[in-house]
Length: 282
Image (cartoon, rainbow, N blue to C red; front, side, top):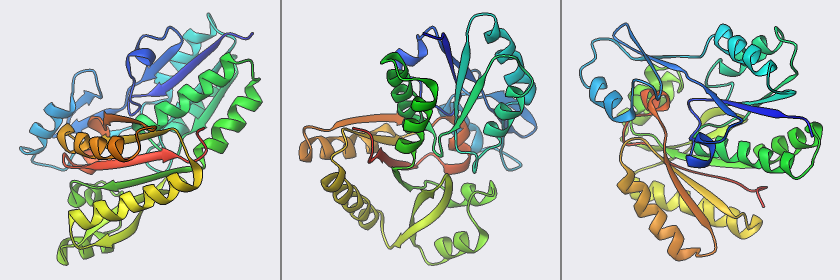
């Protein structure tokens, strides 16, 4: 079997298994606060970020890893591995996929770059699925094909903690931001092929939760997937409340929670809460 390295970026949620896996490598994004650059997950935690956001003089920014950062890693991996599979956050939200693809052209080792169309825990789950398939003896083409098929069955719904931050970062159009702020509407944000869009607009957080859990129920009854992921900005308590409700209603379902991390927190805000699953993840 070909020796394979798996590469991702710091918007992935790396649990203990992935963190300690000898063949998993992570390239960090950066966060720029008032001109000072921090490396995501290295010298800036979400807690530190949200504390700093309250005192900023200028809007925060995020920065994708450079082509050089990927190039240096891929060159290093050439010495130990036969191939690389690189799984990254949605190319519609960041240029990380592009940096990875450009670096892949500069090295001898074959690098397959996968745009996950998502981020955080669902992205990590997709990578884990690919690792399982490869370990089970599937060839590279089949692994990538199945990963992409599963990826395309993803559903994600997010209650964004700060519409203003999302708007400032250019991730939500001005008109939709205006409507949300002026009419006290709670938008439900979703993904379409990796891009954010307003799926629904409701009048309160309770109504939004009810609507989202209804989407979940319909999808679960139709597809019987095994896992669901809850993603939060800073406050785990809210995610745990949803988790308890889901575990009670669907005892056979594996419910996981994870923080979104500093880079996503810059755009989404500390009160963000999301739910995500793959209809095709059996």
